[in-house]
Every structure is written in C-alpha cells, then in structure tokens.
Amino acid sequence: MAGVLWDPTQSQSDFMLRDTCIVLSPDDDVVGSSSKKAAHVFSPGQPRGVLHRAFSVFLFDESSGELLLQKRAASKITFPNVWTNTCCSHPLHGMEVDEVDGPEDVKDGSVKGAKSAAIRKLGHELGIEADELKVEDFKFLTRLHYWAADTVTHGEKSPWGEHEIDYVLFMTVPSKESVTLKPHPDEVDDVMWVSQAKLLEMFDDKTLLFSPWFRIITNRWVIGSTDSESGEKKAGWWDDLDRTMKTDDFCDYGTIHRFDPPEEHMGGAGDAGEWLVGGDEAGKG
Image 1: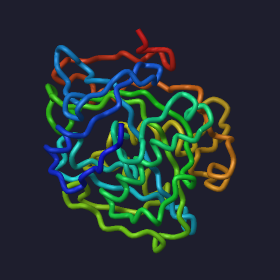
Image 2: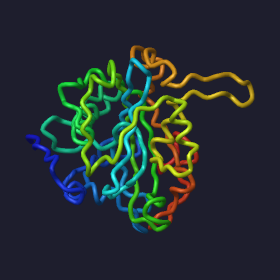
Image 3: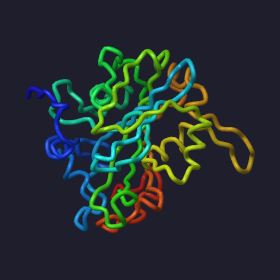
Image 4: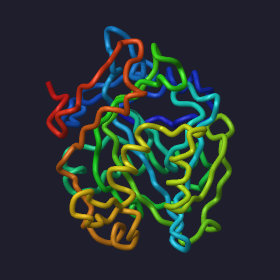
C-alpha cells in the first residue's frame, strides 16, 4: 500500500483525528493502529491510554555543547506550556516515507522509520529544513516505556496523557547557525539553547514546567550523576558528545527501560497508579 503525503497545515484537532499512531505490545511489537486522539485518551476503560511508539530528539551544538530545548505551545492539546527536548512526537502508519520500524531495525540500531519521522517533525515544529538533516546522522541510543497523565496542565482527572515506547535519538550540528529555526506558532512557544548548568538551574525553578519524559531521559542518562555511596562520577551522554555520537558505548538496543511517572503525573481520568515499578520487566502482563 502506497504511503500518503502528510499535511503539516492541519489544526491541532485535525492532527488528533487523522494522525495514525503505531500501537504496540509491551515488547515493542507492532499490533495495530489508533488515531492520535484515541491513543492519548485516559479513561476508566483505558487508564493509561493506548501504548504507542514515539521518538525524542536531542539536538546539540557541537561548538558550544549546548542542547536545543523547545517550549510546547499553549495551543497543544497534550502537555501544553511545558519545556522539553528538541522535538518529541510519533512515527505514523501510512507515511510516504515508511516510518514503521521492525525488530531487525531495532536490533541493528538503524531505525530509519523513527529517524524519518524525526526529520518530518523537526521541519514541522521548528522549521528545520529537510536538507539540513540526514537520517544517518541521528544516533539511536535506547528505548524507554513510560506513561504519564497530563494532570499538571489539565487537572487531577485529566482525560489526556502519554503512554509510549520512546526511541531516544541524539543529533549534533556544527553550530547554531548551521540549522534554520522558524518555530511553528501552533507547536512551539519558545526555543532556547542551554548548557548543562543552565538546564539544571531551570529544573530547580519551580515556576517552569517540564515534560515528564524529558525529565526521565535527562535524569537517567543525559546528565552525569555521582554515586551517593562511592562518590564515583558516572558519565552522562551529554558529558562526552563525541563518544556518544561516534561509538556504541552508550547504546542499548536490547532493553526497553520502564518507568512510572513522577507522582504529580499519576492519576488522570482512569485513576492510574504505580504500574512499572518493577523496572524493565514490569507492565508486561
């Protein structure tokens, strides 16, 4: 079946109805499809929505080591007004360029479907030209399975949330000037290049909101940490971008890391509570 052209001029409501998300088993096998709206509804019947595939892009300036953040637009239906990584969205069924990866694509780390979706959405959300990005320049690092009710912006009985297996993609560009940035006003309210120190300062600012997936990925892998008992410093992916991008030292294609959300993102219309607390094998029953 031939893929279709995707219309970036649609409204947020149209995207919710027409985008066809890739529905998954807990092992990341493709088992069906769902409208974007149906996949993100939290209700008593589906307290964590429908598990679907996503990607999260972290774009860095090689010359300064800074990470590009975006603030999701106030007009977004899910998780509006939150700061997050450069781009986070969904590969879709039926695209002109196939965005559906299979087990072999994950095993060899190629995941051209997720990377093609990333190029499509970096253009749509941030105005980055397609010829400024190459599929082969993205570095696929790992996958995480998480869920989160959008209770911070929609209230404790929020009808919206996320439940995703998220493919984490890093990319570097020579400098800020080497990419075009023309954020789409319906998608992005603001952008900012930040150092690690600046991001940690922002995390401490209680007036700022952040997406739960961004906090999980950043705190688990992106920023280095110090062992509380031994005092040993564990390098984060951001600490040595050259190593991260040019070696497979940090790549983990075989594990799907599983996370419950921070407490403030539990609940929602389905009163969802802890579920993935058992770690990588949790949530599979």
